[in-house]
Length: 423
Image (cartoon, rainbow, N blue to C red):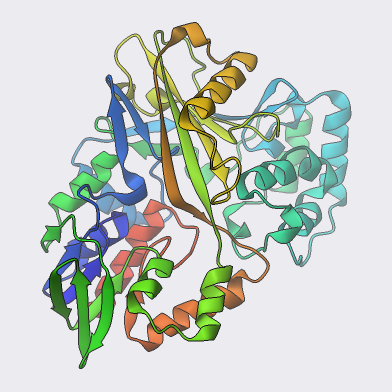
C-alpha cells in the first residue's frame, strides 16, 4: 500500500497514474490546495490567475481527457502598467508603447547587456536585459512579489523568464508588433467551474480512495514501511509520498537532524492575500491580467476572471482579483481584511479600473504557503532537506513538498514520472 499525503493537484494526479494499491489522505474537508475556486453571489475566484498550458504534450492530453470538453482556448491579453500606460506583456516586446526617452534607455540597455553568469536576480536581470528594462520593470516587479531586494534573490528559478531574440526587441522598439513568451500566448481554461474544475475532474479519475478531513500529526518508520497518524487513526504504508509542505512533514516526523532543521528554517515562503471584487457592470478592460511594478499600488497583479471564462461572473457583471504577496507575520500580512479591501478598491479607483459605487461584493482570501522564496542559499538548503527525506525513503512531490516554484502542469508531469517509478 502506498500512502499519498495531500490531495492537491499533485496528490490527485499521482492517484490517476499509479497502478499499485494506494490511498490519498487530505487534511482539509475540501481537496484542491492552491487549485481551488471560491464562489460568492455568482462570482468565481481562483487562488490567483491560474491558467493551463504546458510544453509537455502528454500533460495537455491528460488535461483534455480529464475535463472532457469543459475546456476553452483563450488568447493571452496581459499588460504591464508603466507610467499610466498599459504596455503589452512581455514588457520588452512592446517598447514602442513607452515614452521616447524610456524606449531609448530600454533598447540601448538591451543592446549593451553583456550576458553571462550572475550571482543574484538583480545582477541576472541587468546582464540579460540591460539596465533600462531592469530598472523600469523587472527589478521593481520582482521585488514587489518576493518582498526582498532583488540582489538577495537567487537565480535557480530564472529559466521561468524567457529571453526574447535581439531582433524582436529591436522590432518592438520600432513599433513592429512582436509576441513574446509564445509558449503561453494561447492557454486553456475550464469553460465552467473555475480552475477547480480541473482538480475535480482529476479526482474523479483517481484510482484510489481520497480520504478528507484527516490532518497528519505524526509520521514514523514502522519496520520497512511507515506509520502515519491522523488524529486518532493510525495507518500503515509500504511507500510514502508527501505532497504537502516539507516543513510540516518534518514536524510530523520529529527528531530532525540539526543541519536539516537549520536548512528548513532558512527556506522561507511568501503569503498570498487575494482581494476579490465583484462589479455591477461588465465594463472592465478586455484583458487577462495587468502586472503592476509600481510600489504605490498594493497588488502586484490584477486579474479579470471573466476574461478566462464568462462563467466566472453573472451575466452583465464582471470582477477583479488583486494578488498581494507578503512576508509571514509582516505588517502587510496583519492588515485587517476590511482595510485591505478598502486599500485595494482605492487603488482600483486611482487606476481607473473600478469605482467603489459599482462594487456589489468583496472578500479576501489568505494562503499561508503560496510562493517558495529563492534566496541566495536556496540550492544548498533545499538540497540538504530533500536528501534527508530521501534518506528516510520518503518521496516528495509538488510545489511545497519539493519546495520548487512549479505550476500545476509541472505537478502533473512530475506525478506521471513518480508513478512510473512506484508502479
